[in-house]
Length: 439
Image (cartoon, rainbow, N blue to C red):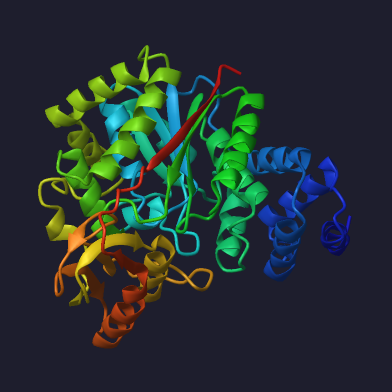
């Protein structure tokens, strides 16, 4: 086979065979296919699409490109969750310790940021010493020992996705439904979970903006997972405005800790509780979502969820007292400034895409493959949709590396807020829950 022929076939809208997809994934892992040809293939796939069979074959090939957690290596039920990406989305940092504290094992393979959306691996690397490059053995043993682990795709775990993921981030191919589905589900299948809950975002700040497209993406991933023998569910949630109030890396870790200690933003807690409750039901640990949510509230109030995050941080090489004094360890940008309201009124828009682009421009995201992320920069929202503001009231605080970066960010951020004179109803964050049930 010749990779140029595969690129040409996909450019012309021709379906690839199973053997051709396997050849492509093998070339990704061996390094024999250079980045420029992979980028060309990704663009062809993004523009022409992949059929359902092609998407399933690509998912399985990527899942099998490295080591996989063997069935039974971790006693069931084993849960994994994944978000398709959003602005201010630090839900994993809440859900993983929350479920582990509730007695469910969580084996989580995560990614870095894509485009204007943040990634769990980048956020965790705000914590000094914490490793996400766990070997398969370390990953399995940690889940067995403390009930939870969060690891990155690597040369050992889903190596094909690690390389393609990095290229998609910088080639304008992040919003292809088949590429999203195969990337997400390859990590989920390799991680060994028998229960998988997906948080599929839609809206301005999501990779998929239209709710109908988000539903199609969710249904595609549910089909892939169910065919692979997993119990599946998907939550559709809105990303028209950022989730929570912190956007960045270190500051999102801090907000997740606040949520685990009972002081987080209501929208963040609501999404995290729904995902965790559905996971408990699919794992047959609760009879209804309402029963599960009651149980999880008790776990939060008891402090066990926060303690579990501390245990995970210690197990993966972070400071032993991180949860007690996170401010001592999390990096902070040296320059701060506030965006203030120019008029009185009710906030009727906080454009998540614009906010995400501002954070990325500050350095919280990547423009080039392998570009380092500035873990200390970001912003904090003081007003969200439905809030009434008066002239001069702070709308957001920007954390920047320099005065020039601050000025540029404040100018761009001013375009993210909209106002009206009459009251505005805050939008619903949770849109729908799709259950695939037993495979």
